[in-house]
Length: 304
Image (cartoon, rainbow, N blue to C red; front, side):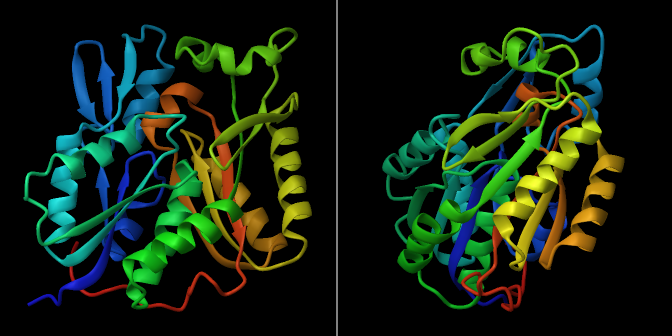
């Protein structure tokens, strides 16, 4: 019989972590919805990232859109996680980008006693994609180390999320335009042919850093910025790719050679975010590891 844990971690599917790590650390994922034509798919369940990006790159794409998980979907995730833990920490994508946070909160408020034996704390992680993955992994490790729900939530809000950096470059801005994100990148307009926009997401805010004119230059600048911010300190890293596996392998090799990596993860960019960036995205999420992460914790026994 699996021993009941103190805290389980739940995330929405904007979080980028490999399936084996999600399973190893008992992290429950609540999927966003991908709407393709007249069909709806659960992100990462009904359609794999590689299938989605092949579809996205096609010349005859159907109408594509996304929808945040409904409160009922979050409630299902909370109930599943609550089967093996008395407390649940739910980490969502920033509220500026999605309705996930509000939906998760609504799930708790409308549970009608179904969560009577499980305490749920919903936290806007202020991170997304690979950054959200690193925050969730840190939270799961703190849980495995025996920390309580409030202490883990406090560490996420004060330590993990504010320290996580995310840098990525796009292969094209055409998907930003098609997804309705033009207003956010209006300053990029004009003379962008061939540009590989290098962007940053930090504490829920996205901004353009530079406009390299090739993927090679964009990758070099990404490493330059990361190197400057890390300043030789040990790091935990999550490399993300959207249908760019070979580039991600090369980036991982360079990071492994040049940085003091306490941990290096490679993950696929989740389709619910990839819809707005398109295939070809390459990025890295990272934070300096000063020991707060409790990286020596062992994963818990048993499935989520």
